[in-house]
Length: 282
Image 1 (cartoon, helix red, strand yellow):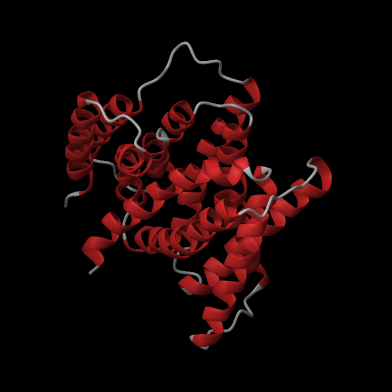
Image 2 (cartoon, one colour; image 1 turned 60 degrees about the horizontal axis):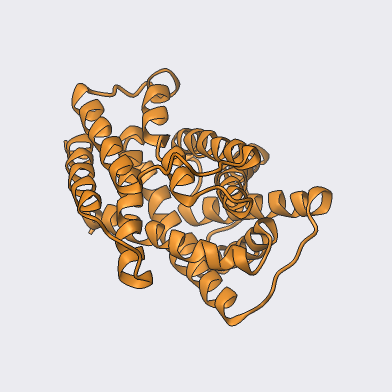
């Protein structure tokens, strides 16, 4: 069962890109994320009661879990949502965030004492090349400066949050950790709204469908699997599967949204898949 988790994660995480645009079209990014993580936190709290796991933890673990949530759900998702909302081309934003496995592998040695093998570097390089082929980069696109900055912040945040979570993964039960991370993300977005944003959400049918997808399938499903994989595997191997996200999203966009899927996309998907296999196999 554990072997299929990376496949399920890639499918669920990739599907989030299909529903992000409808959410942003009906709300500002930070109100949408605050709304999302309010219900995610409640969901994990109810689940903790069902499992009879106490949410009373030490002050040290509380601060660490909340900070992890700020990195994952606050700065990373906030950066991606905001960049797209100000006109950042989705393909370029995704390409920048796809640098995460490379940056993570550079940092796991000095920060986690993980050894990254030549085999993993070869796989990571192939994964990145394949992702570039699938995404493509429209050189003529206007790239808003704020969007670029937000995307870089998102890249740095998800990189450090992965490494941070690997250090803390054995400190708390998964459900309790997820509860406090969701709470940290919610509080972050509430603070952004209070000080910087005029909040609005248009509660259309489209918004509810897209938001329900991101709450149940992405936050409860994909994120929980990601935390499990980080706990069980090395950080460098876990993040290598992120190279499959852009290619899988492209296939989903073709299937569900009738977007173009070119021969180059298929070649890129094959190269990426080979790269991820090389980087993650024992």
